[in-house]
Image 1 (cartoon, rainbow over the protein chains, first blue to last red):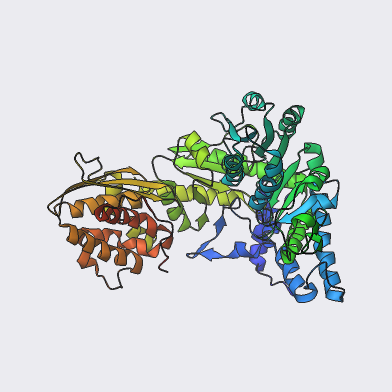
Image 2: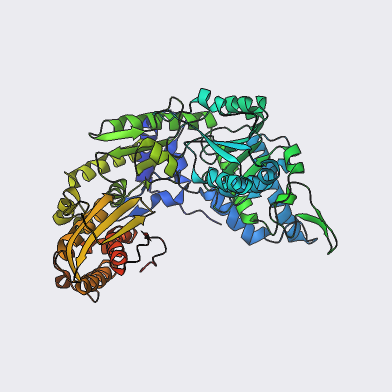
Length: 430
Length: 157
């Protein structure tokens, strides 16, 4: 399958010049951008400036190709068949699992469970570990900055079990108040569920420390890694967490695939999540014997192409110099924050000392929704609203914010376009 | 600024969003209804004082985007003194205009000042902002008092 060359010679030359202007010399963002076909789209006659990667990331050609290739060459149902294609498909699927194991530095491949996404991963833990370990009077601790997907499953569990949901507070900069968090972990706390990186504030939470606090008091820790996986190097053994969840589509992979990492002993002891084919060893009307992890938690035909796409995304990230990428994103975040803070009437939300890739803001009393529409017509895509974090919005004292989020293909010009767009917004509402 | 954006954020709309008319609670309101747009957090409470089938007074409170505020403001300005049936008929016409646009069944002339909202037709993601006040009005006039949400409203595109 041939890749269509989309750049002309002149674009190539100016891209090379720009690459040397664009921050750390070791990260060639223009070259990375050429891997993403959608970035050459125009919207309303203007170049697409995609600043909504925290909602979903764009996909590199490699990922698109890997999935197409699967359908062209390897597609069959996994695990059960004895024919050639079934073997190829199984290799591709289990190969993807091994890749993710290495990506997370998990001790065993069977600790990697494929699910639909972070939301499903959290629900899985709530409905299996949660159901059997959280009882009346027990406590689950979350934080003020969580996404609804790391709030609602716990609310549902606590309601069902008559357990108590407790919430660790943040300061105005968007940082967890660690002493308060620690004081909220008590003898009744069964689980602490916390985000690694906030999708609104960009705050990077000190997971290692939180794990130590929790474990020393007999509580487990589940980490929502949806926003972390594309930006940070995740090492679940180093973090020491009990569960780690992330989504493929936020880290340059397809939608419909995500991962729940769980420590071996925990997964062995947990009851199954969904029942059906593949998660069993044997079925009779008298007795059914469940399979071992990971299969115990993967009922039915899996999203094979999705897993293949996720593996290709892992490869894509591995192919980038992680330090150079991190430096590029950090540089861009600093550039963006500075540029936006110079816009009159603009207020930034999320100013933690340790943060990554997300800039939330409001502008005078202009509703983010109106900002978003005007920016859209300039070709600039941001997200506006409550970002699935209504409790956090309430804590910040706003109904909604505008959010620009960065990825490996974001550039200084993207930020400049956003700032120029905001000038237009201010003009409309003068 | 591009033409469609100019239509959406025309002067009347900006004016009404900055200084919404009838932006107050109505003392002695006989009907109250709440509307909510979960997509963006627009929230609105409508107060209607009906007497002998006539909208004697109408006002609103709440927070939301420029489109939702302007729509509520223009609506209350247009409806004061109108009969209940006239209000509901206007709701029907405005709804068609907002979803089908100026080349649909309803012409701009049929809705008076409310024609200022017609630009929203080109922005399907924003139609719910404009219709929120109107759905809330209908709920208030129906007297059911249910909280109106724009979720579940079928897309017209």
